[in-house]
Length: 75
Image (cartoon, rainbow, N blue to C red):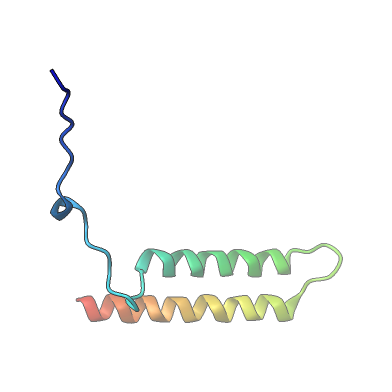
């Protein structure tokens, strides 16, 4: 007697977002990582990299703005 393994159908799998659609989780992670790097740059004991921290803070703000527009558009 052969053993039969039943697999889930393809329609049971979650659909992927359309190409070009921003992922809210990725945007949140991008903002979090940029702010963490900005803090890292500012906490250097020898010399704080203010320009780098500013650049990362701007990147975080951009990610948060896109996240806000995505969430506002979904509501």
